[in-house]
Length: 368
Image: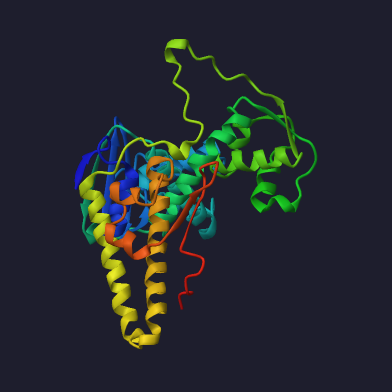
């Protein structure tokens, strides 16, 4: 499986890998940048290419967010070159991180790297299947693709709001008063570095946390009057010729592009197989004629659960929910049979386009 990221986006490819429960590696190439994701039966387990010791995204991540000082980074680079030892083993052996800290850093780095590559519109992808791709792979994470995509969609929603309040690394911050535990442990850790007037970029470089989370914590602290902005540089002016047309006021009404038919129907087929399996499991328990309404309600609710997941996938892939649930079939994310099994439906998108509700009729018998 290989092709262009202009035809298939990363989110689509990840969904295909998850649905088919593939094992292997997915390599993305854009210019000189190479990103490799490893999968074990559809679960994302690593994004560190062991064949390229000269570049390890983990070392870059730890250096960027203050886990390692420059002299530590140089020491580790030299040590890896001499011994060919894995960076993760060195970090634990040299006591730079413990096992728990390393796992958290790996998970955060994987989520951040996936989120950044979601936006790639140029480049190529190649999937190489087989158990040998992950043989001997140590220090693994375990990340389900649906959770990864939903977090990616949440970040895509939140980033514009965060960047509006904190437009860049040159924003100057100061603490109004000490943070309270009500903001959470991560917030206390980040704000603990704000012991003096500081640039946002400098704080991010010390936070030991992904950039998105630092911005999110700081905006919450600003809203709680724990942090204040002393200087907020104006965003760079955009020349009229470079200005982009305004986006629609209701993003959930925007339709940009549709899923390719082969991938769409493959997903639909997988959903149908899952639904059929569910029906086969519950059928022996529902042979009594009195259980027919309950069986129908159960089948309908199972179908609605699959449609709710498809709605979130639609939002992640296209940045908005569909106008109608039936559009999921048009876009290849649900089969007509699944829609019929879930009917009748009540569907509504929130005014801000960030959430939706999908339910059956209010008088329908509850599923057991």
